[in-house]
Image 1 (cartoon, rainbow, N blue to C red):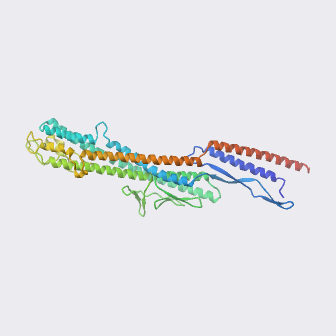
Image 2 (cartoon, rainbow, N blue to C red):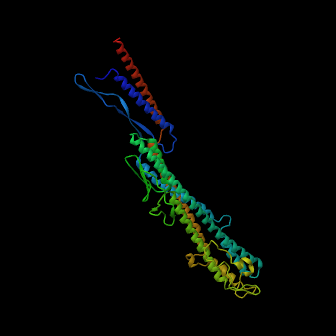
Length: 458
């Protein structure tokens, strides 16, 4: 038979259960602005009934209890968000790197390589019309030095940015290791609490947030296990297993988009790390084209200039205009002879004051389409390089914009499911408050009834 205190037990359980409902609602409200937090709900369930006999067998309810406290999440949305964050991290990083180098190849206020090329050939054209003019000869020397400086400076600026990218890659390795270590630590805490029968929702949120941040740095795949832990992989490399985290391999080759250590090779397909690799490869490609431009200028100009005769006394022939060190753009400069004296500039093949044949031929290089440049002129080749950089920047920007739009859409869907709505929480708070008040009133009634029953026997 149920005891005289059965009603009090029911009311007390109700009070405790509704108090937990208020606690969870307050926890939601307190974390409305917490990144990665998922809304939590209380799952109430009836307690086991009490069987008694009174003219037959009956089951009497014993009240309510908290069945579980659940976080509201959509696993599909979380997985999709992780993938998009990796793609966005890649394109955002690539756009950041390319937009910086774009300024190096943009002729601002007539001071870039394109303007220097035009000034160089204009100077030769002017010298061809007045071969013995000292000022014209000086202008050719100055224009050649300026062109070499522009090409060399652009190459070195790109090289400096590549060095920065290498440093940022190392920093990304550190970030990946830090996040992996954080996931492993949370794994241990979650495993411990779940072994005791608890559901550590806040720890699960923290771990999911760390996983999302990790996916922004490098492409990952996660596997969840019954003990609450997750294992995290990038390619075939295990970043986090169910016991510990493992440092990401530090040896990298941007040209193959791979990391490696003594035993494994990791393909990097997405994330900020892939963005750095893509940026590094793009910059290397731009440097290769600068090398081609410098080497072709060196070869074509020197081939013609070496056939000329200077107007010095005694005259010299076979002199080069640019230095004879075919190492690309990094050391592109005037030859030592032209650097030392403008009189070493040959204008013709006879050495006579009015002979401007060599200067004229050099000025006509402006319009010559060269096989080494893909059947383009020097100006066309450089314009194509600048246009290629612009296209790469716009592509990265458009891709980043698209992925950001997709991420915003996913976040809106996620917010509608997992986000905290203050209006909904205030409604829940009012509901639990009224339920608590009713249970308190019920407890007061049962208490009064019990007192009346006891007083009957005094």
